[in-house]
Amino acid sequence: MEVGRLFRADDREGKIDLGVGTYRNGAGRIEVMAAVKNAERRLLESQTGKGYVGPGGDPAFCDHLARALFPELGPMADGQLALIQTPGGTGAYRLGLELAALRSPSPRLIIGTPTWPNHIPTAERVGLRCTTYRHYDPISGAVDFDAMLASVKAAHPGDLFLIHGCCHNPTGAILDPSQWRALAAALLEARLVPIVDLAYAGMAAGITADVEATRQLVETLPEAIIAISCSKSFGLYSERTGMLAVRAASMAAADACRKTAESLARSLWSNPPDHGAAIVRTILADSGLTSVWSNELRDMRLRLASIRARLASAGFPGANRLAAQEGLFAMLDLTPAAIAAMREHHAIYMDPSGRINIAGLNDHNIERFLSAIRVASGATEPM
Image (cartoon, rainbow, N blue to C red; front, side):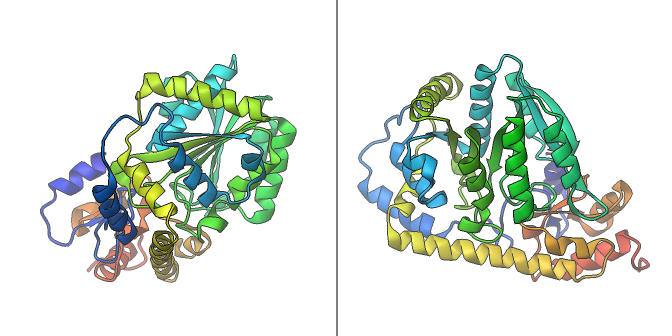
């Protein structure tokens, strides 16, 4: 928040914002996707009212989104997946935590750090006790998988375990397929309930690949909570479009979860906003619009991969670590003084932790950024 305020107050031309976590195109803009525009035109012509959708939201939106993310998923076909529309992925996360807190007399959430700044305070608002472990090794730029497994083994049955489904925020560090399998097995043995934050599906390697880890958890474990956001994948940041998916051990348990979640939602936000969900439903219900959207999403992730490759080969300290990471974010090995110098002398704004949103870089500003970071990191002498 403070970084954004400082950026807006800066009147220098060519300032670079690497703080806010939104995808921007090569011109530096948050562009409305063509598929979204087309869907909105159809809605404008066909909608006859703006009534409430109910606490659980639009069932057609939930069904289309779930099938797009998890085609032919066994637990969904067996009726063991409860789906509830929410105001964004944050709403889904909050509702999932509320549901989990009702179930356990002494709820605890285990979180790897660093993580998205809202994860811990939102859980504490619900009354969960949060414990942390070191998720990221800043020396290697990789997940500290030993620490992750150790935290699972030290947990108590019924504890909640937070997982980033893909594109870890803020580090971009990833688990390989064998590590995901080992994690799923460890969670099952420890009888933990994963809470999956799935905010960036499609931004790394494509929808199917990006949700594979989440799918594996849902198929392996009897219970799981998944908070899904449409903000990035559809560019619907301001529409607050998301969904909570709860994997339950039986059809009856899934139905009970859905009814309880709807009751909780009634007291939290009454009804979720409809417009963004209607856009997603319209896109996913039409094969032509789905194809347009898929191609646009592909172009977005290819641009991110291209920027990451340029950064990884740039030669500043720690740059090579970025090559094995994914998504919008990366952690730079910069001191607070260097980050302040980037802001003061070069009008380059980033989180004080060194996290950057690489989508803020493009052909017009990346060389200036690289020149500045080489100076700030001590790779070259200042001019």
